[in-house]
Structure formats: structure tokens, C-alpha cells
Amino acid sequence: MTTSASAAPSKSETHATTTTPTLPTLPTSVAAPERTTGPLPTTATADNRPAGEDSADTWIAQLWSEPIVSGPVARDRQLTIVRRQVPEAIVLRSDAFASLRAGYWVVYAPGPYANGSAAVAFCAERGRTTPNQCVGRYLSHRAADIVYICRPAGGGTTAGACRRP
Image 1 (cartoon, rainbow, N blue to C red):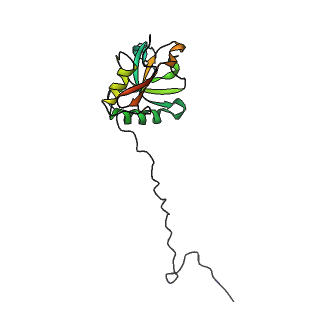
Image 2: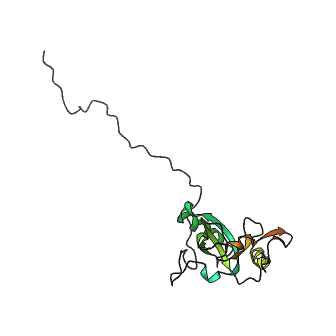
Image 3: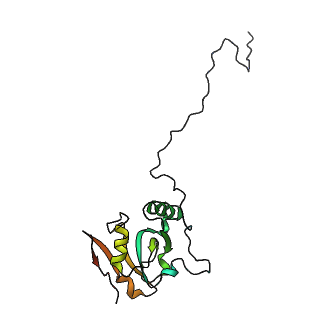
């Protein structure tokens, strides 16, 4: 008895078709950042000074802070969100200023503001009325100035250290 094996299947055999499985599309929790207007975030000015140096020894409106370890994508995403209400918002690294807690990107609107209450009023005019959306901060290279934080308190009032002697 002789048997022969054929390497190729005959036309009468049934063939299974091979398909490549498609992977499900995973939803993203946050859309990609939009293109922002104004200067790109940077850690230095054109003359190699830390970003924000032009605002040193003044009150700023701090609009958001993001841990530096979150990375530049998270920083840029937050900057884009903030710029929808405050187009002039820019970024500095808190490590460069002793009056700020180190380790954060700080999204802010530079003044000039006469005091922390004026910075908070600026924010309120743009719909940013809670302490999570805006505080007035005194920006400096002096650690003793870390106490100067002015928060919105509702009804157009402020709380905290809103004036610096």
C-alpha cells in the first residue's frame, strides 16, 4: 500500500482563512494639547536668566502649578488649558525662586499688581475665582517671602497674606 502526501492542499479541501486581529481603540483621558499662543515654556530667558526673573520682587497671579516630575507634556497641557482664560499666561520653574515651594512648574500671569488682592481681582475678571484656580504670590529670591500668598475668599474678598510691607 502506497500513500502519498501532498504539500499543497487540493481544491476540494476546506481552507481556514487567517485574519489579523484588530486591537480595540483605547480612549484617552486627556486630549493632546492644543497649540498655544505666546512664548513657549522655557526655563531661561534669552539672556540666560531663569524664566520669571522679570517678575522677581513683584506680585504674580499664580494660575496653576504642576510637579516638575509630571514632565513637559503635562506642563504644556495645563498651560494650554489656562491660556483659554488667560492668554498671557507663562511658565517658570519654582526652584529658581526661594519664595516658592521647589519642584513645580508654575503657570502665572505677570503683573504688575500692587498687592496680592489685585492679582486675585485680575483672576476673578477672567473667571478664575477659587484658590485652586488662582492665588496672588509674591515672587522673590528670599525664603522669608514664602508666606505671601493671597487667596480668593468668595464675594470678591481675599484671605491670607495679601500685602507685603
